[in-house]
Figure 1: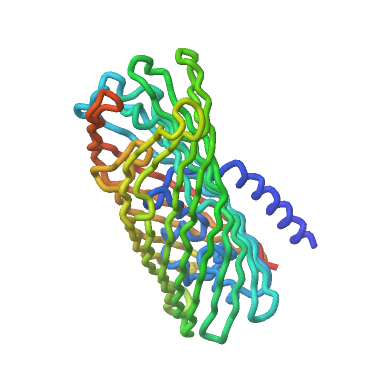
Figure 2: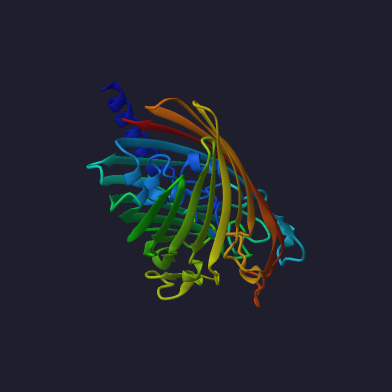
Length: 419
């Protein structure tokens, strides 16, 4: 009973954190968040569709829930420390500086719960943040007419069910109800550089996901998952934040289709101590071709107040991870991954100065008993330098020419309970 009461308090506390901390610096391709567990962080999130190692499988592959008997809870916190810097080379507004470090350190929590109803049927719930973005440049800088602050938050509530068809095949499915909240600011006129326009908006959207897990015995598992796109119609408030201009308060809207994703993972056990995890993941970022914000009231009604061409392309990711059982209570992890960006050089914006990245990760699990365990993970991401090639025929927003440099450190901790 003590275990159950402790787990209940952890669930309530984590849900409260999730409601307030669901933005991050976009540390998978685009503004997708790969950081959904600390147990996965140690292997660079490789092969998790086949791993079935704790309750986070509810998100990674719901079919895997049926391979975990009993009930499980996982409480996760990942702390992300990004760096985004810009070096201008001939921009129109060079005199305002390079913008400082736009990286925003963020805590990204998650909660997973699953329970077996029968030996063949299990249900679970994931509460997490699959997408997020936060960049915050100096209020006056060379790219201030393109972006100052950009923040995208998501809160995903994802119940799921799995069914074990036989000893080899398990199937899973889930439904997502996801909130997207966005804040965008930028300078509006070179005559008053401190004047900024601001958009705040949000929307809820439905989605769904499917999974399949094949267990061939001898420590060989293959898992595949698919998550649908989510169509968001963001509505919110448009305003200026300076007394130097005539007040303008209006409403605006934007459409944003978060991408569909698919992943194939393989887990292979070698003897009693070593397991290899590999995966290939695909994200349909081509669903986002532009960011267009249209005023729906006020003096600008019907006009675009933000109209950024993004032209995202679909992206992919490959990963390799190893787990080694050092002693019964300690499991060691390591992983490598390569993540292709959906951003093309000609359309890279300071809202998302993204590029291809390489992952190096290490981690460990301490399991003093069969009832609970603690996972720790750390990853460092090298992001390829990305050119900025934005130009404008008029004085605003002008040309933004130069190079972005960025990197990221991620530290994760996870407590898992089994009962």
